[in-house]
Length: 93
Image (cartoon, rainbow, N blue to C red; front, side, top):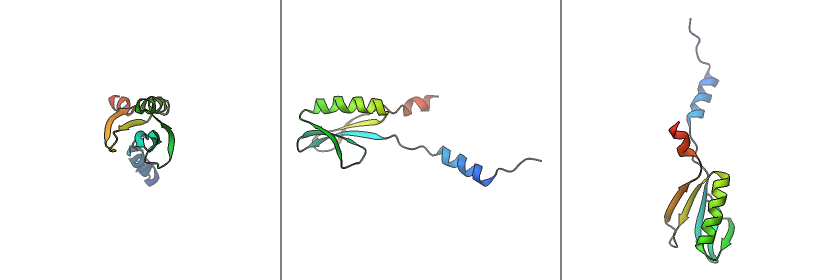
């Protein structure tokens, strides 16, 4: 006779299948130049006069924390995305 799956185990397997989106960091235009922010937070981590300086700092943070980095233009649109989350590596296995 086959064992029936218990409800809690089946629910656990279903929730394990859900994939969360990786965390993000953003480089956005700011009144003081350019800012590095995490996710959709209004809080600015740090500001820089030059966009290149903000990108370099954000890239290092994104690589260390394994997040997706989104670089925005002055108008706010995403100009470039860099995936440091490792999510694409997981899909290949």
